[in-house]
Length: 208
Length: 251
Ligand SMILES: [Fe+2]
Image 1: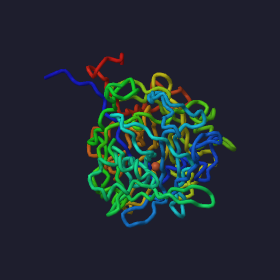
Image 2: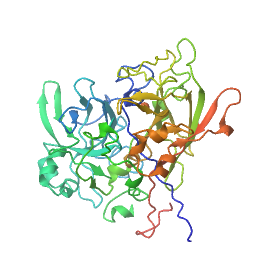
Image 3: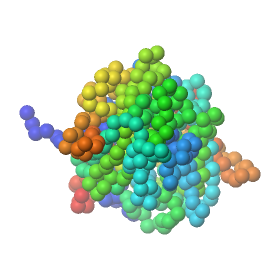
Image 4: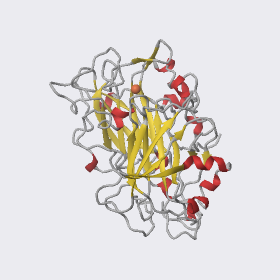
């Protein structure tokens, strides 16, 4: 026998289930309980940067929109700095930007929204710049463990071509599953981003 | 900072989070839980080392919460208190190194005593309780400790097989310090015979991992003549120390 290695095991994930919205987004699900609510509005009135809307759907293996999904986002501010003590870059913090949002898909259409600003570039581990991107985390009934992916922007072609993470995706055809399509609309700048859980167009998901 | 390379101007004081041990988690494709069949990715996940965006995550404070958010007995009480068994659920949020995770957001949601959710998509015939909302949240203290008061949820039927029943459970969402630690899980109650036959529980390959989701009755934490208690510790991914990687940073 040897001495035991006394590390604990991570608690096991279980599906968020069909009623995740009453727990995590009650106001968005039409249930008035908390005074203060988290929402899909990531940028406040004073937040610096280019205002954008992310609009998308999560589609199952049959191409049907998942209408009970919850999507969370995490991103840097317009300078490329995260609002967190472990980001020790010297870039300016934005006092009106936590950088995190939570969006509940529409129960009829499956569309989820994020109202935010376009993030700046953040260096990768080796100092190379990453293309601007937003990290997404997806949970729903039928998803046993939250899915991690990234959203990049179609109008950042040069930066995307050199992005160290996109370049890790061996099949070039799959890289475009992470690129949101820019659309100029009367309401402002929208990036369309559909997430495919399965199939030929399956989105690249990360084990991070 | 050392694990991020010496040519980088700045970085974290500690290293990366441990690689996730996927053997303690259910795989994506679990036909016994039918909904997973069309919602499970089929291609391999792309394993990614962690950058700044992975080792950071949202920070929450007491400002984000209301005063009754951790009391499900009172936070939706309209004409009186909800029906059911009064319980406290408490425990610590730890990392794999056994250290408490301080000041992190813990959210929870559940059915009422009859097994009905206050959700427009829940049509189970057990009645809504007019005084029970079924959700709450709190921040852990400096040692990672959390607690809340609620009504013990009832089991409920669901459409998987015709005669599938969920064991009594409380859903938990935990943030940790970084987005890599983000976790959603469910807590079950000691002694519930429905745990062993639940298709969602059976998605978990490791029986020891199932046991860690079952909260024991904790008689030391009860409030005598008032409220029973269950203890549920939650473990998030731990973080490497950066020993011998350029220099010691005192962690
Ligand atoms: Fe449930």
